[in-house]
Amino acid sequence: MSFLDELKTKILIADGAMGTLLYSHGVDRCFEELNLSKPEDVLRVHKSYIEAGANIIQTNTYGANFIKLSRYGLEDDIRQINKRAVELAKQAAGNSTYVIGTMGGVRTFKKSAHSLDEIKRNFREQLFILLNEDIDGLILETFYDFEEIQTVLQIARKETDKPIIANVSLHDTGVLQDGTPLADGFKTLETLGADIVGLNCHFGPHHMIQSLEDVPLLEKAYLSVYPNSSLPTFEEDELVYKSDEKYFAESALKFREQGVRLIGGCCGTTPAHIKAMAEAVANLSPVTEKEVKPHKSPVSISSAKQAEYTPLEEIVQKRHSVIVELDPPKKLNGMEKFLQGAEALQQAGIDALTLADNSLASPRVGNVAAGMLAKERANLRSLIHITCRDRNLIGLQSHLMGLHALGLSDVLAITGDPSKIGDFPGATSVYDLSSFDLISLIKQFNEGVSYSGKSLGEKTNFSVAAAFNPNVRHLDKAVLRLEKKIQCGADYFISQPLYSSEQIVDVYNETRDLKAPIYIGIMPLTSTRNAEFIHNEIPGIKLSDSIREKMALAGNDKEKARQEGIAIAKSLIDTAFDLFNGIYLITPFLQYDITVELTNYIHEKEKQLAERKITHA
Image 1 (cartoon, one colour):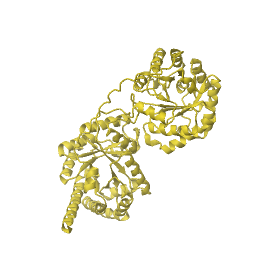
Image 2: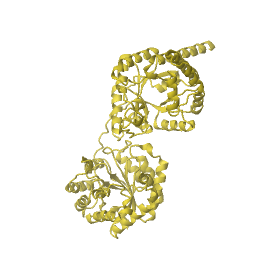
Image 3: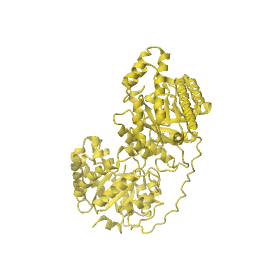
Image 4: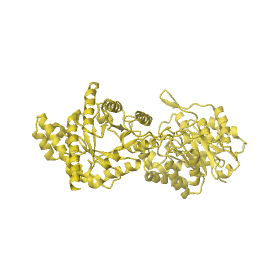
């Protein structure tokens, strides 16, 4: 008999956390590997849950896949680990308990870390091993990414007719990570072939009950819950879960009221929690009708406020556009010069001032503060760079909300230089997200939805630039990255500086079919020393011999070197102007007079172009 048959008339009890018990016994390494090195410990956990009243137990295989085992150098042991896990679970179960094969989600909040193709290969390998061991069913658990669980569920359903449990995990009550209401998500999983759909991990009973209140009983699939014992607390450098078994018994009754037929536990739960729930629902039949609470009116999401400026991606498609980077100063007494530069650039007629986010991992005056001061004093539009290096996922979202509140809607999403190259090489580089993930997050904010799927109450109106590094050996591969960033939502690109007219032409030929415009980066040289540093120490950038010779001829004559650097930059602008509408000038060492002169040069070229068009008309 299948446990699905039993669920028609019964509430079944599943087991609780495996890792929690193993950890309490002093294990601090890969739990799945213990199937081989300490099978007696795994067997003891299984038996303790069966004695507590579990009708269904899971194999100790949550992370027994290539991606996760490779972190421990165990990727060659996938088959042995999974096979042994089933053997141990079956040994404990005997003929009275069902054994289901556990397969955990791979993606966390860093969605770009693993492509769907990689996930499919990773999943299939473990799936075939488990199915070959004649388990009673499968459980897919702890899937935050709805795209991932849909993908693997479809694969599993094609390969087996055994029961499949599909459990998602939530960041926020009643809504999936992408903003999908839980009831809609469950219905989708049912349609894709899940026999049981439910929740596991992250939340304790309270929030899971809340999440299920809006979920009706499904036509075919049953409901399951595997709550954590509580929210964890941090004690003596350890995460600790605390919860009362009586509370879990009361919660089991409430789960039943919500239509749940399979009840287990996740992080922090123990045999005591499982025993309490088993006793609470013993001899109770599952509910067959459920009164769903009226859908709470979704929090209204106000339309985005009218943007103060026309988006740069629209401007650059209609005419030549100049944006200029002027880094905030490293010293507090440098702000006056910075603001003077902002005023001079505004008078020169740039479209935006771009402000780096601690470039080269060196602390500077915050670019948001500098941008607001430039806006207030010079009435200048600020394009704020956002790196993934200095802020975790929480900080990035808070930062974006702050930018929106200040009316700063132009941003450049970049990964950021690693901290080891900066002034504080021992500082932590966070990188919770990649630039791809950050672009997607910002676009999700534009829909009024946070990363957790929760309403922001208002849509943002960010215009998102992405970085383009053309200084690579294989330009075609760099262009593929641009296409991926466009898929994530990038509106336009800003390139790293180029020092060759031929390279600018190559970039044009490789990118002319892209759907997003490009601002070509040009950074004037200031001395032969500056030129040699860029040539020899900046990865990927090589100056031509002729440029280096020209800068060397200037020697220590600062003015001559300045004029030579400007002349080289103008030559590059001449090439870029004919091929690209966007020019991105990078101010060297706060010498804004140089970028003011180059801005004027570009405007003069545009004026001459307009006059020629009138003449020819």
